[in-house]
View 1 (cartoon, rainbow, N blue to C red):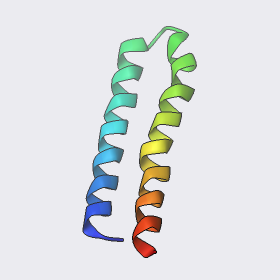
View 2: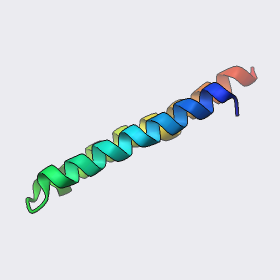
View 3: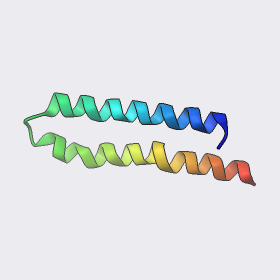
Length: 61
């Protein structure tokens, strides 16, 4: 894994962890967090799993 991909991945994980934690704090005690969690989870999966995979795959060709 290149340095650029590693930095991107670490940054994405930190940002999405902060987004999820802030959402949990703001929406605690309401049913809205349960509804919002799948949407945020999909966004996190996109930026933490799929994009780095595409970056790695495009460089191998």
